[in-house]
Image (cartoon, rainbow, N blue to C red; front, side, top):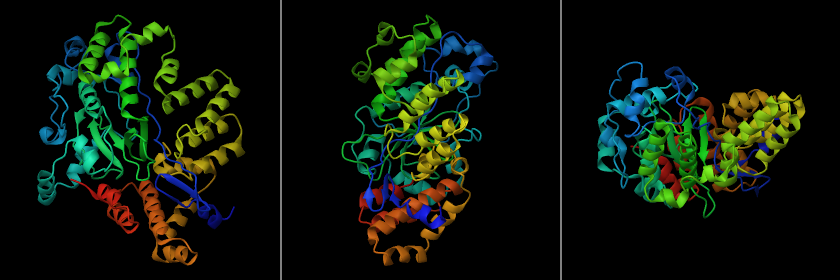
Length: 450
């Protein structure tokens, strides 16, 4: 296939895939992370290498403190009070023992080290003028979503903030967005630098809720389709682990339930997992809570490990059937499955479908998906040409509407930033593209940075 024809089939706006001027309506969350609780009392070595879900709240700190191999240094994030931006969220400060337990329990999830995203942004943008601007306008998360992101705040957003803080995460100001993909609203940061956020789709259909995502170097990783679903999963996993009879997990459950408040009873009935008599937690989550990409991927991988290629491929195909429309991750994973069972041509085709989606939704680096597709740098070169003045004039001459040309430019700049790894270099131009297209509320949101 010629480079031009491949590139031409990939015209789209953020959150919408357009082919031959037909909107295919591909709008949805990114891929999920592998977070879950395991039963039993772990050893210190096991804690340090396997558990990536739990961070301690007040009640379980004394239970776990003896497992910490060394006295903990106090947690001192830069300007904690300024960074919280809680609004209606209850304060659940970690005392020293809790800080120690959290540092032991957090297994690193960042593929390229555990450097704090917030700290990195502060280091690169700590001028007096920036600090003055941040002090002049301070939003809590609910107000920020409503007034800056220009959408309806999730009903139980403050409950989620409480839960995240009870797990030992530091609440982050919603405007602390320097260095991040400009479509997220930061919520909290773990000691390893994992940033939990909300995703604000610029072209979301009416009634679509804000997904909960994790910010990664290459883009976003879906945690849940919405706030309620994420809270629901956390409560179920804690409840399941507490049923082992272990005091630590019981304390974890109690702290999370205390943090979530009245919303917890509306989302999940405590003890329901045990009453269901389901032996497999993943099965319960898929049936009772919702679809999570990490669980679907784990299910397919288990089939493959058992040698059941048919079930693995059926699961992979199900994954791509608009369960998470508009995102490339399901197609990337399906490509990997196809390749592992020897279906080379199908693997390439699935990867090429993935690359028609925004590259920050692939759940991996662009280069990995391009290798699966059998491509080199053709697509990158094509996009770099499209965002030049000459490339935009060519589109106008072909009859494309000026508004569509600038929206395409915004999408292409997002893709290139995913590859180049620097969002701040293009965020102002992306915002300007939306202004030129007449979408002023999104332009304001994208441009906002403390």
